[in-house]
Amino acid sequence: MASSLIRGRYLLSASHEGGPIETVYDAAIYQEDGLIKDIGPYAEVRAKYTPDEELGGPNYAIIPGLVNSHHHGRGVTTLQMGTCDDCLETWILAGWGRRPYDHYLMTLYTAINMVESGTTTVMYNHPQTSAATLKQDVDAVLRGFLDAGMRVAFSSYIRNQNRVVYTNDADFLGGLPADLANDVRSYLSVSDMSDDDYFAFCDEMYRQYHGDASGKVRVLLSPANVQWNSDDFLLRTKEQAARWQTGIHMHLVESPYQKDYGIRTWGKTPVEHLQDLEFLGPEISFAHAVWLTENDIDILGDAGSTVCHNASSNLRLKNGIAPVNPMLARGVNVAMGTDSTAINDDDDLIQEMRLVSKLHRQPGITEPAITVEQVLGMATANAAAPTGFAGEIGALQPGRRADLLLIRLDGLEEPYLDENTPPAEVILGRTKSRDIAATIVDGEVLTRDGQHQRVNKSDVVRELREQLARPVDSGTLSVRRMAAQLAPYVERFYLDHAPTIANPHYVYNGRT
Image (cartoon, rainbow, N blue to C red; front, side):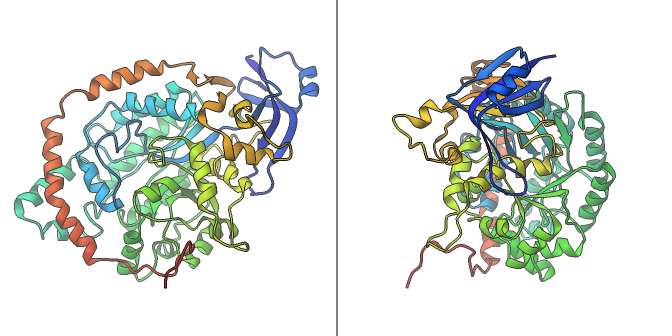
């Protein structure tokens, strides 16, 4: 059996219940074949076992492997692909002209980047690509994550309505010039998929990958969002998830226009509509959930659903700030993700943790401020809950998988650090990717001092560079021209459906 002992000056682990961080000083973890067998003071653990390898030491810290709870797998980012940050709805349209890419290489590249910055598990949500190549694309994606050594909770979303703007496709296309409307219909037809075909695809994925021999894949279901999926589709998803005992992952009220869709369509918020459908539950995780009412927060808390908070993405795509403090105060399980659009245009979850910790500090002595305990929990234990790996990862305890980070303290303490500074504050406030000495998944050291041990990153980068240096194909250029023609009509639709924005959860400044 492969075994190792990992030593740190202190070990930090957050609980899913949001309680205090457990801190063990001069700590050691002993693992065999990827399973944590023992945790305790270094001298005691070292005396019990003869490991194959010993890592760390008194100038290191140990924390759980980070869990990215919402990601779309774009290693070469949308910005690098030419889609600049914009309002979500127009940004989506601009993305219609992104050039094709090698799904395996792109995934391998983003997985290496995530592992280097401490992410060991990802909730990956696959976009609605060509129906003809979907299975081939997804096989390549999962091969990329597994070759990089990551765990992945996989889902592939589908939109079966309102695919251009938030209204009926036929009605909107009927208002366009005939040639443009025909071009849009042709473009959409490439990814057309019936509900039956979608669930057949998911069934195939579930049988092939869920709980496969690696133990590193879980398969979830994914409606895209309430405005993009019919009620019948949502209910069928709920029934299928119950049969498989798996999770559901979807977007929800990411933008004010999405909340407004609910008010226009049902006379209530999307969350209230999902409650009416009896769709909510602890098996469901919602990406974003920025535009929640006070009642929505209570509903999600009572349902036990998870909200996957993507602070950077919300800021970059003009969606605002999710009410994380009220959600945490009322018992909503809040996780953390990067949505492939982190603040540094990378997938560094450590940087995302730091942004979250500063963003949710409301002005005033008595106003709420998120704690380091809550932030660490959002990126570990809370984020593990909806992945299908709950109880196996997210915390450092005997019986769980040995997914963890070994962090060098030298750079965090140089040239001085007061000895009374709480360890969690040090880790959250000062750690950078370069301080990660090792990222460990299932007991396997995937990175040592920033170098991936399985894959040569330079080779991956070189191959991507060569592929993307080729001229953009004529089909992609044609789609870009079509999207540019369509843009004024899309903008006009949203200008005509401007939402009412009032009574913000957070008040940062005021005017007279």
